Length: 304
Image (cartoon, rainbow, N blue to C red; front, side, top):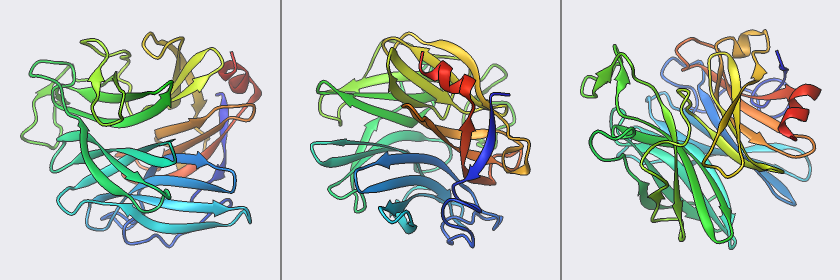
């Protein structure tokens, strides 16, 4: 095992403790928060995350840490009364404007990727859908979601997961199902951040990968993705050709992440930070935000 669970982000030691907000408690009332996205600025840190409310709907929340080191919940910063799922935030700041990409589902698993923008990182205005499922028969014809955005050299690059069907027994009665159902990761690019085109006809990575986060590295790109075994990762020289690297951070051996890591986020650097939704239940609907301590071997591997 490459790592141990050392610090709760929403729990006992780093930030804010329960009781949960009503928009974080989930229908079972035990809390369901995940999909962390950390924006590190000169005078503050912004932690965006998804959470499920007692009404069963997902919304995007924000907590802010000032120079004092104290975290403060701002509550919901993005929701949609006509949707049952607004989640999986990924943020990039371009020209002083915060671009927040997220998964949007009106009903069932009809996921698309949408955009909201803000001038202060707190008050957002919805800008509509930027990526829809592929054409009939395509690998991502059923849904696309869990975006991860980067911006460089005037171009927006958006990695996302998608699928054409659901596993047998999935609860959505209207979705196509298959015994070979799996997720894959695609890449789309844009010059303006709103009109995206897919790179190639197929996915750029398979391995049933989902809930991905992509970051720049010294020798290209790093991808982390969720699994029941912990956080897995892959490397790429160009963001298109990926090589799976296996398990980056295994389970911590405590109840907090007994059933896996959901929607991981990696902030690379000399002291890389790995945030995850830690799964306390096999159904992945009782999650906590947690920071995973990476050991020397994992840190060395990320730096290669």
